Amino acid sequence: MPMIINGIGVSRGITQGWIHVLKRGETAIAKRTLEPEEIEPEVERLNEALEEARKQLREVRDMVPENMRQEVTGFLDAHLLMLDDSMLVDTPTEIIRNQHYNAEWALQDTMEQLVAVFESMKDAYLRTRKNDVQHVIRKVQENLTLTDSGGGGVQKRDLTGRIVVADDLTPADTVLIQHQNVAAFVTQFGSSMSHTAILARSLQIPAVVGLHDAGMLLGDGELVLVDGHGGTILCAEDANWLVDQYREHQRVEQEREEKLMALRDKPTITLDKEPITLKCNIDLIEEIPRVHEVQAEGVGLYRTEFFYLDRPEGASADEQYEVYRDLVLALDGKPLTIRTLDLGADKEFDPDYEGAISPNPALGLRAIRRSLQNKPVFLAQLRAILRASAHGPVHVMLPMLTNNSELMQSLALIRDCMKELENENVPYDPELKIGGMIEVPAAAISADVFARHLDFLSIGTNDLIQYTLAIDRVDDQVHYLFDPLHPAVLFLIHHTIRAGREAGKPVGMCGEMASNPRLTRLLVGLGLSEFSVHPGSLLEIKQIINHASSEELQKQCQEILACTQPEQIHDMVEALAKS
Ligand code: PEP
Ligand code: MG
Image (cartoon, rainbow, N blue to C red; front, side):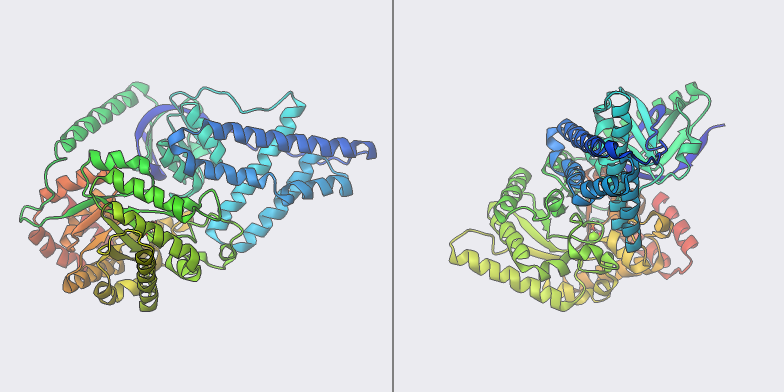
């Protein structure tokens, strides 16, 4: 009997392979009291294990492919920094010297102390930092054991065609297994926003996370099919049947790709002649060729937080300008929408930032709030964006606006920046479009105010859902409550689109909902006229739009909007998608 196991699909791709269960951190840590003459050699042993861990991380860092360096190495650098942190070096040394315990136990004690501190913070992002501490300390403990049994070094394995199953993977593990040609990975912990998930996408490894019983359900050597998009693992005793399934999947996928590619140069327009704009969301310049390949009409969301991933001080104005300029030039006349910094909460990369210990960072000083409190950083970014606008069409987009005052302050700063550039005779586009993200229920409800003062609105459904339904988007314990079809969410989307239409301003959507082809007909029916999506979904969405009548869908959506029963709404949207 075939068995389907469901987790959270975080990195696209369907692949088949044999399970390789990665066992880590299972060695029992012995507690031993040292004789006085053993103390200094033990400190020396600890230092050697720490140095070995640094060496291993640097080795892994060198394995990162050149075009993925920036965002991937950031995670590894954070671990390297931890290995030099006094908490991690001095505390175990003091335990060895003052309490006379062995190095493994001194590290264990240090880890427990640090984990207790992180746990008391009760914040989803800081919980992931707790995992980082555990990852780093376990690596050093492993090295202590390995040194005893004859040397560590980065493990050389060949995982070609293997599906790695693990409780959790460190950033270094993820890079390493990619280097060892792994076909996919499945982890017990993690969410779509965890470091491991972000890395899997960057390294293009199909991945499913949050599969709580992974270790129990999947055994070494078993042949399985992993769907990193749908989040499913298909297991069957009959290997031939599974191979057939895989081949069939591949054949269907290839046929589908070919059909979709034929749509590339066709306009996106409904049967009743409503034109719809399709753009892409990107994080890296390396994704631009894909934007051209699918003939998107531009970039509807370029996230800029990666400038901060590997350095708390971020990139300078000049460095940012160069990146934006290169993107504008690479887009060759298509508009680039640059979202200003959205640091904080799930995008907090600096553990020392004081906001990182805020009791609830998702409701704290993040996104535009943080930019407005740190004007030199905000102005440097605005200046870089404006300078880049001299090279081609640029839109600037403000994240997480909540009230009119934030909007007015931001517009005033943009104007100040423009004046400064004029005084310096530095070219920029005075017609540059300024838009805002609707991500907070308050902003959606008062969308008319934002539409009046801005050139465009873009609905960020990832956050809009988080804030409307009061669920932390990175907390996999409440992932089951993340419902894009909740009547309140649909109401806010519809309300925002209507407000934009009444003000004569375009309303787009750049949250994940826009990239889900099962929701395309619903969104067209709600009146959405611009979608900004993953390049991989764009052509499928175009195909759906080109076969739909906007007027018909709008009528059908009225019934959905009037319905208050979540289950019924799901059924109706499903039926709408298939109609
Ligand atoms: C969103 O919130 O929908 C969005 C697009 O922004 P991010 O996912 O970067 O917060
Ligand atoms: Mg957002």
